[in-house]
Image 1 (cartoon, helix red, strand yellow):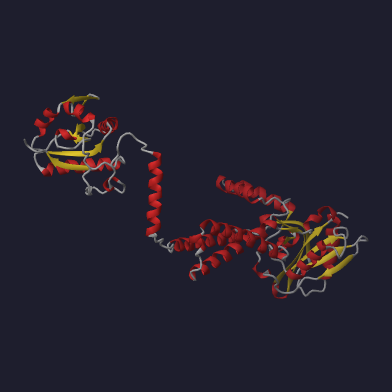
Image 2: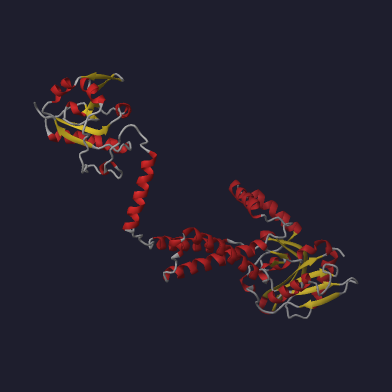
Length: 466
């Protein structure tokens, strides 16, 4: 039995069914209708009820070859999104409860275990909710029913041929019948001898939000084609672009039986809000992390053990490195070392450097001068010094780096100007007669060193007179 034959039989039957319904004009019948948003009605009857109220009846006809229109499909993605939204909301509220009652100690004492339990709990909760939701009617999609729910008509009928369902006890038929009862739709079966079997009549009044459905104007296929051609000729390029984008993003083709699926933007909103709440709770809980008090005896034992391990390894560098808290980040410009670290005996290189203790930068090279020459030039003046270097090569690398950025510094063996200072320093090229001038130059040097990430201490000293 073809769909065209089912439509003919259904129109004849429904015309007789509404023959005695109070009305003020004749019943108009039409077949193969199209409406906006790719809605289809296989048949429509309409007349004017008393008080000049229009009354419309539509039906969906289904034959054996289009039986997928009435066979339900389980909406796994929709059930998953609902389960995810419910689980995320429940999980975030549960964590909020634990945070409010100060029961999230596991987050601080065993953080990795906490995150593992939280992840595993979220997965298990989602699966449990998914399993609980899946049997609900909401996730059993029947194309004809969902299309009826997309527009308003006074009466809506589902019409099918006798060979669409295997039998009346089949789950596919039971689902269609239950959804028709729930939504107030009529159900007709065309038997093999073309007789009509009435299973359900449409419910009177609004059921399942019927009055909230949209009113749609249906046209015959020929009138619809003319309207589409006229609309295509009248729209501008912007409207055509919008229609094209809608067509490729919303999949509204007539042969797409899933085009009336429920949107998931509400579930996405719930998941987003739940995630924001969860992040806020975790941030607040992190602020409650406990203060760990060090046991003094255990700390001493641990430091002694570490010192023994380091002593067993031996010195890693030949050059002694004397650290001080003032040279450790964060850098404080005005901080002075609390110890004056002066070697008891000068290394052998001190005697060599004394003869050529001043290294002046000239045309990309270093020219050396004796200590006497530099002392005579800066005697009694203020000089700006930076760093303490025990490695001449390292001093040169810093000096060339600063000179590349036009910072006028030179190298100096500190003992040339100050007694018992067995190390190299950087010295500004210019010496100053007043402390104020030296402080301004020191401030400029400090600002540049900080911008370059060089944690070098700067200081101002006055060269003694003989």
